[in-house]
Length: 501
Image (cartoon, rainbow, N blue to C red; front, side, top):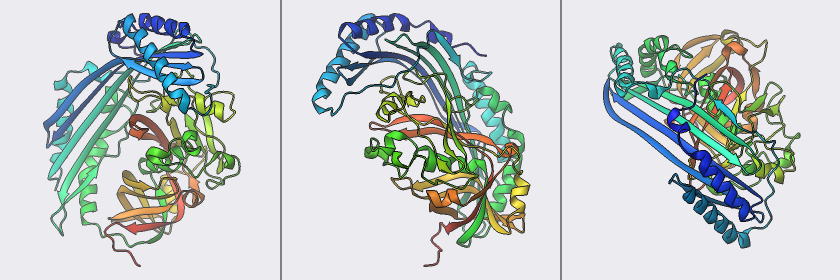
């Protein structure tokens, strides 16, 4: 297992924490926590195998949060001195006092066991920041050049984002943790002219972002050579494909597409702060309200969705959340029924739950933690079919591969999703691509149309590298695993507008 970044472990976060938490106790805080972060975030972009842009930034700072007379106060700072930490606590207590007249009820966070002197590092082998900029650019350029040499390919875009997040947390209950996670987002997009209009048609790789290191770019966890070799022919087929005929189709949806539908229709809908109306200002609420727990038929009996902070290589995998809660796994939907929500310590207490399930995360050292999504995944059937067997059940349908655009309403009910590729299925076999397709439904109608999920061999862990929430907006990663899955009679639209009235 990799060790935490030595540049981080040399920083004086323990001394700052002791000063901050000691001052919080002196000022009468019922609870206080201290978080120190060093986040390195880098990105590279190439066009036709030539570097067009890059950045490499480091954000370092600390945050203090105090619960003072039942009200939260928050402050942050960048100076690595005990004096600065104490001053931040005093600002946080003042903020709590200012907010008290506007607060309807005291906050009582759900209890959490103490986790003392714990260290956790995510599962990766090669730190992407251990390579030189020249080495990172060279691999992207080599892959771009090989793709650009493909028949009919006119242009190639390549992009890579890498993040190393190092964090120390401590609170007045006695918990103290050091943790580090690494994640990468690689993409290659090929373009060729449409033979009819001359406009460029694009096709992007389906390799998911992952909680992995540089080894992911060299073939551990994804077969880049095979995907990039196949891309020019798939792009040529897409460019020449007919526009889809709108109608109702059976869909077999690949995990490279279904992860995003999970994210929008289940992940966001089962955030308890949304379900009780606390997130309405930014992105709406949820149709899946707490009073429907155990009663809402979310989908068919084949639908089993878990929330998980422990999945290896998951984008949302951690050892502990930003409230010192240990990572866990639990059910959100079981046999099609709504059985759980995502909660932090505050919403857990409001809901009468004995403990948070570890869903607090701050999008930076200068942001207060919000309730954020874990890895939300549709589980495969232990003895489920492979992809060919799922396709064989379809007489007339479409196989959907790769994510693209999406749209969903503020209650997470009505949605529309597109994809990278749409393959026609006729009599159980793939029969060429179609273009301009989008599938549209309501959340419960869609998931109730789920007939079968594939077996473990069809399962893939994907996810959202940048999920926005809150005001001011915060960004967090969220993982989503899925098998291939079969849905019956889903409405498919033509995105050019060629739809019957």
